[in-house]
Each structure stands twice: as C-alpha cells, then as structure tokens.
Amino acid sequence: MEVYTVIGVLLAAYLLGAVPFGYIITKLFSGKDVTQYESGRTGTTNTMRVAGWKAAIATGILDVLKGSAAVWLAHHFAPHSLWLQVLAPVSAIIGHNYSIFMIIRGEDGKFHLRGGAGGAPSVGGAIGLWWPSIFYILPIGVVLWLGVGYASLATLSVGIVAIIIFAYRALFEQAAWVYVAYGVLTEIVVLWALRPNIKRLINGTERVVGLRARLMNKA
Image (cartoon, rainbow, N blue to C red; front, side, top):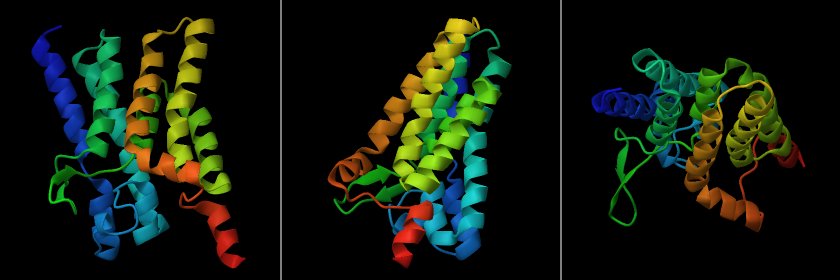
C-alpha cells in the first residue's frame, strides 16, 4: 500500500469528521451559534440544549455517519489494510473534536479548534467495522444518557463497549484483534476531550440531562 494512500485516506477522514453538522443544523433550526451556549460543543447534546430534539437527532445521525463513512472510505481505497480501517474513523473523531472549520479565539486570546466530544462518530466507526455493534453500544449509551443523566458517561461508554465487543469477537469468533485498538484509541481521544467533564463528574457538578434532568426540574 502506497504511503500517499494512507495519508490521503486519513486526511479525507479528518476533513469528513471536521464538518460541523451540529453548528450548521443549529443555525438552520434556531439561527443560533451553538458554540456560544452551554458547553460550546457542536455535538448532539449541546445541539439539543440550544435547538431542541429534532436538531439533536439530525446532528446525531449525521455525526454517526461520519465515523461509518470513514471506515467505508478506508475499505474502498485499502480493502486489505485493517489498520487503516481502524485509524480512519479515529481520524474522523479527531476531526469532529478539533475541526479545522471551527477555529475560534478563546478568552485567553489564543485560537482553538472547536468541535464535539466524539461520541456519535465513535459509534459510527464501530458500526462501520462491525455493524451489529450498534445493538450493544446504543442501548447502553441511551441508558446512561437518558436514565443516569450524564451525556459524558454515555460518550465514554462507547470506546469501552467497543473494546469488549471486539475483544470477544477476537477471542471466540476469530475476528481480527486490531479492531480492539479502535476501542482503545477511541477511548483515549474521548477521554482527552472530556477532561473538564470528568473533573465535574468527580466533583459532583456535571450537567444532568435526559429523564433525570426533567425529574430534577419538576422537583
């Protein structure tokens, strides 16, 4: 496999992941700049806070497709390279979290690349590698998001569940062990993006969402 193929696929995957669907959809639905509200992220959760459920669902679907499309892109150009098929969706997640299209000057006066936390494209990457993984990742994420009430925990669960799924398949179904690396790398990228949320989880000050948030508001 040519080096330029690897570079081209990873760059294309990054740019695909960098498309800020949450920003675009929030603008279309509400006219607001999602980066100016709440967490400032362009992912599903912040889109829901700013523009409502319909905008959040549209954002989530498109962000999931980023990760899946990155796998399909790698498979098309390098069908025999499992490592590239793993690294392409990771590159898309990095693009989603640190979008070249979302350069913003922070309060410190420095320029920063904004984006999401990587949950939805992480799900998409797992689906691209093995589509039935959605039946394991999605229910756990929904319970943590809606029931437990922490979007950050739902996001963190994706990589962990992916590790378990792909390790099980490697052990008992003769699948490639390299897919386990997808879960590990995904978890590392998401952990880095969610550093502030993890601190708030430890301190007990993390934002509550879903059914738990509604119950707390009623109380």
